[in-house]
Structure formats: structure tokens, C-alpha cells
Length: 439
Ligand code: SF4
Image (cartoon, rainbow, N blue to C red; front, side):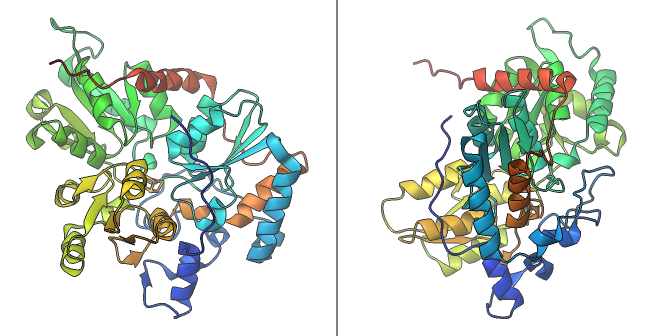
């Protein structure tokens, strides 16, 4: 997969928009006015901080970020940008800065590559001589970059508190426990039947911890992205009677439904209930067991928002991410990954009105990049991903200047016992191909 070059800097950003809202200079509203403050205000507080995930419960033991030195907290924006540029220039090819699509503009403007999590992990792999990869994204993404990069390369997450509430919804202990319970229902999970199919194949979304990817690799399973989920499910159904899909129920449900799997054969697995809350008979009949996880950013989108967009903008093209709930995907004109959304807008030759159901930073960047179109976020409330928000230019300046000083802060390392099977699961994904149509 090719990686994307740096996008040109653009003016509008969520951060600026939030400041205008808080100052009363904008008619827009936000889900949390403290988003306009520096994220270091929340480093000492357990929780995801303000933004879309603020209502989610953070796991005990989730990584915490130490206090950012005061020089970075008090520096103004121009000074931080100047320090970042100077440190990058000093480091040269020794460092690669990666920026996720959902990062704020103030961070993305310093990225050497901008993309989704897998594109960025691939970009890391394509720079084997860089000593450090600074990943402006969230924790599982830095782990994936560590899996794919060289052993002597340091992957750095500028703020350790930048987790992902969805990835945190499936812990390795919960998944191991689920697997044991499924073995009680189905019998030995590695025993193939007369047709060569095992009872269940575990499939994890890229948005999961390295421990979960390792679990999947050890148990004959595979990783998927929002771009290739259908291909991966086809791969899994060629090897198993059913699929255990985690952590995002919506991506699993939307993908399996589009493949013709009936909803009644997609029970939800609630890790807090015996057998996930289903009966043994329901699990026997299941085709896809959906983990009870979700993205709090994409869960905000509703059918009512789509109805309103259609009423106010006749002819509007509604595109949403497949992490949105099923009824939202069904009501939209199209659904696809962030890369799909970006390419669909780039490919539109006539001026078009787009209502987009994905993270606000990406939507605003697309609106600035394609002024010939009218592009707006389906959600009228400015509410970015809480955890992406934790990366601020202050943290980026800090980690880069630490590297200049010969220190390696916030290194993310996946141990070999987890990394080896996790790579197996990723390699299965890379090898999985859509079935060839036969005339
Ligand atoms: S947008 Fe959703 S899935 Fe992506 S990092 Fe934020 S919480 Fe996680």
C-alpha cells in the first residue's frame, strides 16, 4: 500500500474552531469547552479526557503521561512550531514523523506522512534507516508501527495517554476468557470438521492492542482494516464455521450484513455476562459473534442527522465510516474507510455537497482541501476524538527536542512473545485476497 505525502497546510482546524467557540466568536457548539485548553491539564487525571470518548471508562492501568515540562506548556503556538521545525531539521533523516488523518492540523502540518493507521505503519516500515519514528496517533497504532519496523528503531508516542477507547474495550484477559467459554460450547477450537472448518476463527480490527493481535495470530486468526474487512471475513469463512470479531461491533455487523449474514446470526458478546449474554443454542447458530465494542466518535452519527442533511441540502451525498451504527450506514449513500472517503471526494469532478460521517479533523481538512465542494460533518457538534486530541504540538516539540538531546522518550515496544504471533496475523491479512470471480 502506498503512503500518502504530506498534505499542504490549511488554515481551518478543530483547535482554532474550538477556541473561537469557547471565546463566543463562533455560532458552533462543542461537546466539551475544555477541549480548547492544553491536553496536559488531563494527564494526571484518569480517563480519556474531553471529546467523544469522555463518557467511556478507561481501563485500570492504562498508560499515563508524566507532566509535560512547563516550557512546552507555556510556549505559544508560533514558538512551538518553530521549535518543531528546528528539531526536525537537526534530526534530518534520523526521524520520521507520522500523522493520522484524525490529528489536529497543528500536528499534521509537521508530519512527513499522513494516513490511516495501517498506511502509517507501512510508512514506518519503508524507512528502515530512521532511528526514530514519531507516531502522532494513538497507542495501538504505535504498537503496529513497532511490529512492522526494525528492532533497532524506536517508535515514539508523543503523549502516552493517547490510547483508543475502542481498542481498550477488548482486553486480552477478556478475550482469553471468551475463548475458553466458546470452547465449552463448541468443543476443541482447533479441531476441523469433515469439511475442514474449525468452529470459530478470531478476527480483530486493526484498532486493537498488540496483545489481541498476538492472540489472533496464535489461534489461526487474522487482522482486518476498515478497507479490507470483507476480504478478511471471506478468508475466515473459508477456514471456520463462524467468526469471533472484535473489538468493533459496528464494522463487524455492517460488513457481515453486506455479505448476507442474517442479523439473528450475529449475537453480541458482552464480556461481563456468561456466554457473552447469549444462550448456547444461539452461539451454535451464530455466524459472526460481535464483541461489544464501538468507537465513540462514529457512534455519535445518527439517522436524524442524515435526514436533516438531506432536508437542508437537496442532492447531498452522504458518506459515512463503517464504524457507524448499522442504521446510519443503511441510511447513507455510501460507507467506507477514511481512505475511501478521501478518495471519493477527490474523485468528484462536479461541485458536490458532501455530508461526511467521520472524525471532525479529517472532515475539516477535506473541506479546506477541496473548496470547489461543500463538505461538512454530519454531526453539528464539534467533538473530536478524545484520544487523538491528546497529541498537541507541545508534546511533539518535547519528544523531538529530547531526541536531539540524545534521549528517547515515550518509546512503545512490543515484546517478542506478543510481536511474533501478531506479525503472523498481520501477514495473513496482507496475503488475503478477494476471491476471483469465475464466469
Ligand atoms: S476515532 Fe475511535 S477508533 Fe479512532 S482512535 Fe478515536 S476512539 Fe479510537
